[in-house]
Amino acid sequence: MEWFDIIVMNAQETYVSSLSSLIENELRLLHNGQEVVAVRIEWSEKSAHIRGERFAIDHGAAVERKKVMEKLAEVLADHIIAVREPGLLRQLIVKEFKYETKEDIELIEGYCKQFLFGENGSGDAGAPISSEASRQRRKQLLVQRLSQYFEEHQRVFNLDGFLKFRLQDYLDELREVVEYAVDEYMMDRQYQEFISLLQYFVYIQEAKIPAAHLIHKGGHEFVILNDKLEPIDANEFDATFKLEVLEKDINFEDMIVSTLITVSPANIYIHTRDPEMTVIKTIRQIFEDRTTVCAYCRTCHSYLGEAKKQDQLSP
Image 1 (cartoon, rainbow, N blue to C red):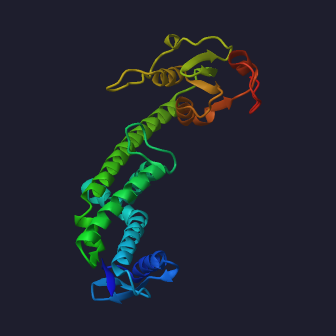
Image 2 (image 1 turned 90 degrees about the horizontal axis):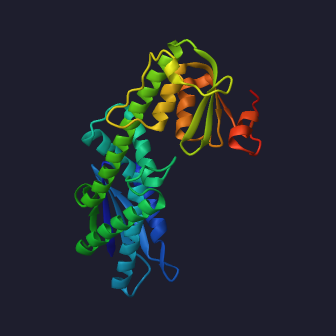
């Protein structure tokens, strides 16, 4: 008795063999330690058939078939997420969002992975839920759709047709993820272009003061001092550069960067207990080898209080 016939169109032999082995291994023992399903592959000109036949059970066929199909739905759901989902995401990026270059596609795919699996961080507020919770939700959706299909169709299952025509809600979720990924990619590219412009401006400018001390007191509270540890007044300098902020209010990060570029110090000493803060990372990126991050020195002690020795700098 043949329980299922999974059709895979235009697939490579290694792919079909891998999927067949996965199904066989997962369905091998489902009834009191007895082998339930025998899986074999048949090839035609344009497709492969992964056929599962009832094996070694002589009673309770209806109940056993239900168990087999429930397990098969889980196996195929895991397979779609692990193997087919990356291709579906790439197809959306290329066909619907019209990205063609390898670099663009791979970067957007990276953001998709962040949103879907929490890789290399997670998305901003409002982005799709990342990590294992997202995967489990997608798996549950796929299992429901697969189980419904198996109830309506007794035997034949076209994997490619199912992905194309039976999973619109699942594909809509992937499409939403790609939209977020494209937005993040565009913002990051604009940010990098802006940083490159600031780097160039810093490069062509001559230093106006020997040093500046950026004191990070915590949170968004910063103080900028000169080499004599006196407050800097940017208005005293010839402001040949003014940071333009389009379509948003000036924030503290913009003001700090604008002030440092205006006074153009030869060296910037950053005194902080939080060197991974975004504005500090931005300043280090713009001013590059002009910057030194300090976590423990006399100036740190004066403004930031006692801290564990992590790095020493005595200006």
